[in-house]
Length: 546
Image (cartoon, rainbow, N blue to C red; front, side, top):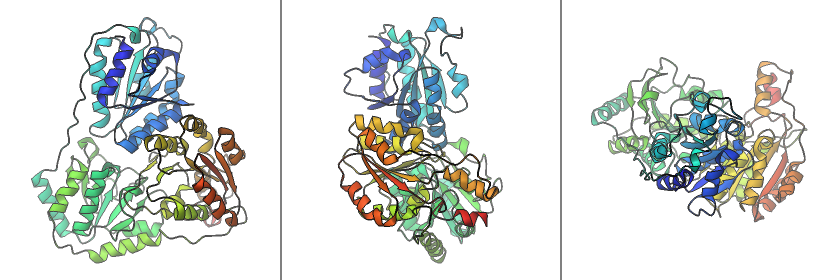
């Protein structure tokens, strides 16, 4: 058996069933081993960044490590955005990189890179396997490291000549990841804090994304009538129509909502590392000394107490914590507090459409899609202000799947939608993207068409890097610099790939265009000419200048 053949067997043993890649001469033997391989679906992409986004999206959808293969040097550095996103979003990702031959290492060979140095500050582990005998152990360890504790990316560099070595090494079975539950003494202390609280607040994050975690969160909220605020890009994990829904902790949400949440006297942070976005710039709770009592639940002890003084740190499975606390029911005394937060949050789930001279209010389009999209529609949202309408208007009921970049990387929209189509064929997949992000990775629509994927891509086209423009107007009013865009005809662009291309310029055109999009059995690109004045669902350029 060649080392390359052994890698395929090891990947199958670890549970891999799909690999995203851009081919390269540095791992030709592995590509040859994947030829006619039915157990692993090899998805050939058009750029390593797009392939990486797909692998990250696939991991978000399955809960298993995403798998990415790229060539040395330029291929690996093109994929760096996916490693950074996986680290920021706590997503398990395994990256295989073809390396220069062993006899070339250290000589500054063509496209030679030391990946330990390049990815050492991002990846949880970086290995270079020079001896095929160590492949099974290394792959099993990498798979385990990617999933355990705080999930994240790992890298395995594979010298191209090593891939041709003969080997009799045995496949190493998958190493089980430990799943810990909360200790009884700690749970008693949490119950005591909860009994003393007058205004408790749950901040729930992606560590609860999954059927078990979502069910446990819903059960906890119901058992104690606790208000639940959801972290950035994880609005889908809890029913937003629940009387316990307390809002969404994303970018630039309304200040009155943040101020109300800050009145909490106890925060139960469950399944989140409490980064700067959900904590609204390290103010909810305040760093390093919170104004509230703080209980932090995350499977990795290293993430607890390193930014905030924490009263009770629980390095355990977030779902098990929710179940344990739900079982310790009591008579809640904060119904009025929960209903108050819910009333404020629900007030921001409605939206009054606006009329602008420079384009369409994107909320008109999102609201119309919401009326017609199936309840189990999978959403892929790129980074940008346009997504504020999606977060505000979509009917999140706690069951939908969604992928987005909590780490803020532009480019997830189209690749994420393609990956979702491949993982869930037959389901409606909507990809919401801005005119900036779609030009970064929209070429992966070609990958989708080649795989018979049918994503429905909605482009918010306002001729600007809108998020940066918002910051400019806030900090340097009327001094636009570097944010204007000259765009192609995105409908024609979509048709060039083989998708249905639609153009929307006015509110009157929206119903017919949405109906055509939803009825079409194939990929769709809808080019929506949106207002730049309506820069987000919460403000306008004029308001920012004021």
